[in-house]
Image 1 (cartoon, helix red, strand yellow):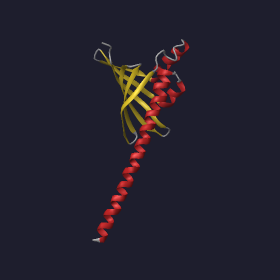
Image 2 (cartoon, one colour):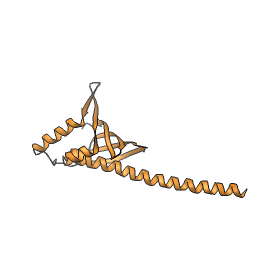
Image 3 (cartoon, one colour):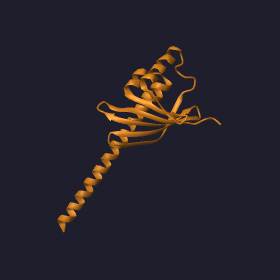
Length: 153
């Protein structure tokens, strides 16, 4: 009987230790995912036009997938970077109104993550983005985006 109690106590203590450790790791991973999105997307692509930050946070195979007229289209990261560089040459950075992001959801399983982002221009919710990320040897990379555009009424 004593052996059973000791085994149960040890199992409970190990379970508590593993559970608390995984919470810390998941919290740190969520922060890392959010940081990549803020640096590469919010600041890199939208507010500052920092191509180095974009290249650091986006995988080269990244593409936005969109839908119009019931057809799916694809916009690769290299095209998006070219448009950023062109807008920088035209003096369109920083934008008149900074974009801000809210993060209603970041979900991580192993080396895969998704993030739901609310994209605001001023007070106006302009897009809801769904980003997919993978964790590579060098850290988290944004690999895909789908979105919903909120139209003004």
